Image (cartoon, rainbow, N blue to C red; front, side, top):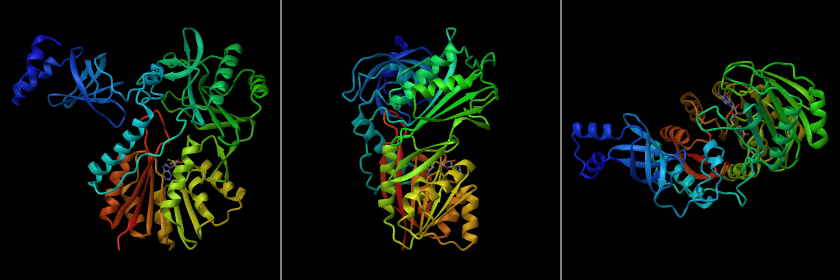
Length: 477
Ligand SMILES: C[S@@+](CC[C@H](N)C(=O)[O-])C[C@H]1O[C@@H](n2cnc3c(N)ncnc32)[C@H](O)[C@@H]1O
């Protein structure tokens, strides 16, 4: 830090605009200043305050004093990086390999696991307080894993040319520079083994990795799913063009090494876009789906369908939802955002009927097949947007006693909340992977006659900042 900034910052804060402007000029890019990290942001960055500016810093934990290099300053906030750590938090996990932080694979891996669970609990509490003005709810500690590593049943790995060679790995955070990686730390180890084997085969068969700048090459991504209980594996090869030279021989070799590989799918994505998948899927080998089990039911999962990536903790999440619902045999349940039916089918055996809605056609097809495969006939699944299906069900006179919602990160729409509250179910179970949008939506439900009575965060994504939570709203009398 230069002397002038130091003198300015050591003065009592003078709030004049001229002073603020001067501080800002001094905090220009590349300045180095000493700061104390006071908090963690929702995405796991250290938060430091310099005058009235909030700085966000990667790999910095509350209580740590650091020399921070200023990377960028905007009107309201700044970004910095650790130039030197002057003190170390007792909650720091010193053993973490920096690759996992730089790539974002495990962006909270520098915090020990106990502290991660406390951080996630606080995220939920803070969101409910800030977004919904709810202070009087008990948020129990996030349910965690005994072994919070190697839990992911799915990998999505970019394939690029690095130093003249086809590589699989992960993009450096906020970039498309591929960092070659073999051990993904939080992925099922058998998935990591398969990825290395396939990478070596692609090299041997001289298949070209995608080159985004030159818009050339064939292989864009490898996606692997492995059933947690079944061990069945699906490999999806995302390519820029339909033809994969000598693919039959390649598949034969992979199956010989990994007999649990029961499905190889090609997805063709010829668009210059960040989206991983294109529209066209072709089954190159075996089945269109893999099967797995959850809470005693068997599920077929196709390439396009959503399936929770941490099976062990998803079972705990669903069990919490079932406990919160406290179902009766005459309950009528709506399972909105139903995916392949995992939640609704877990409820079906205990209630009168389950109505499910999901926007991805393949997932609805899976849900219908899954109901039949498990001998469940009191369910109806439709392919539609949750908003439209909800309106239609209400028009048709369906009176749900329990509505379960499990939307994507952006949460529910106002129209869905209004229609679902209007039909007056006794209970609404809200499962969310984004506490902020969940809290926003709960605020509206509270205005429409519901009360938040139970909350339980469940750690589906150890070593990352992502946070899953289930809440119970009950109709006020
Ligand atoms: C977080 S996932 C939950 C899936 C399922 N409940 C589970 O636990 O596996 C959200 C699901 O909502 C679906 N979806 C997204 N927008 C939707 C909408 N507007 N209407 C209905 N489903 C939607 C997605 O395709 C995805 O399957």
